[in-house]
Amino acid sequence: MAAQRQPLDSIRSIETPEGVDMALPVAGPVVRGLAWSIDQLVRTAVYLALAVGGNTMAGDAAEGLLYIAIFVVEWFYPVVFELWADGATPGKKALSIAVVHADGTPVGASASVLRNLLRAADFLPMAYLVGFIAMVTDRSFRRLGDLAGGTVVIHRPKRQPLPPLPVATPIAPAVRLSLDEQRAIIAFAERSPGWTEDRQRELADLAAPLLDGAADERVTKLHGMARWLLGRR
Image (cartoon, rainbow, N blue to C red; front, side):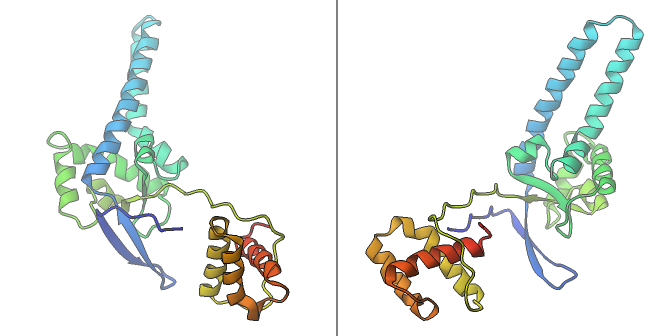
């Protein structure tokens, strides 16, 4: 299965404490601006619903409750989604981006609250001008809230469904397989439905030193090994 092409905004390289290099595809101002617009539409719809609901109530108390509700939605809408929706508000989710810590780990409560409280500073003097300037001058496109909270916004491609595999009984390999050998067996099983039976047997013969039995049996065993390697048991 071909790897999904990454957007060209930028790639942030980090090294984990375990010494593993990771590449985070950070999201740029354009896609983040579009995500913000979607979220603003969602918040506006909520405000209108609250206003309509407030009109059915009488008195200054109703108006005060309405303003409190708007304040809570404005400031904690992104925090709630970032903490309980895998780092993504509805706007971010629609565009396959999400907030994470700078080391790639899921965003925590303190970082989320801090980055969103500083939206007021990013908004100055108007239309998020300070935040935009901060983003275009930072190699990871971080606004002031991101810098203070230690967060970045990254592209998160939608998970692709696993391709169907031929029906077979999972079989554990009889010998230790290298990573390349495991990948070859899995690729064989994923692609074999598009091949003729003769082509499948021809390729299965290449694995004859690892398998016994007739050619047709080797094809079935490779399918079973692929299922076992992928944990489809």
